[in-house]
Length: 239
Image (tube, rainbow, N blue to C red; front, top):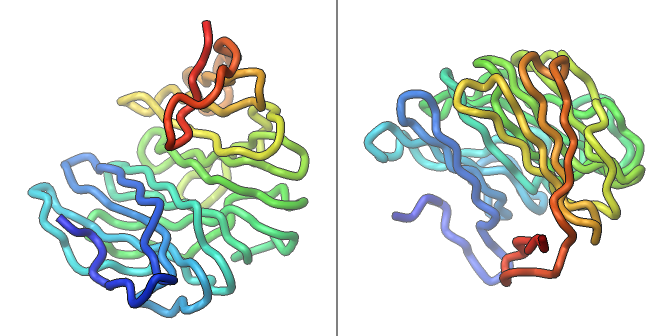
């Protein structure tokens, strides 16, 4: 079935980079970036979403998530929790203090597609570009967002309760260049793992066990990067 309800008008209009997450009782939210918004964003790319119920039926038409509309809102990710979803993305403008290049923004969405509260800034480290948001739910109303801090070549993460920071701008690890991390939690949201490509030296990961960023921390690397295993950019790891 087709998710987007706004049709592309020409070759320069597109719907791309979709992501999906499920909530506790089977509802799910599809998010993507678009330069063909049904809302107020007519400036380059925007963040779009559409909510579905437990039967897979759409709750309503697609809607715009971002409120900041200057230039690009893109590279979106989504995570589900009991009461709804958290959507995070890279933004050329900030809802708060990040006036230096791109920052990471987020917003909560209910299971029926209602926007909960305002868009808010995730990153507090604001030097240079903050790119490639990845988000995971941690114990209900808490969530963790990880991203690539391109200027100092670090992977950073912040923990939130609703839209209030708990742990702010923790450096997870270093990288070569600027690439996307991925973060996920286990079924009960007690443990988390962040993975990222560390240049040509392999795939790095860091596991956080127990309390958010306060439990035991194990860092490991797996092999060395042999090349690209397929055309969509999944890295192949050598033994």
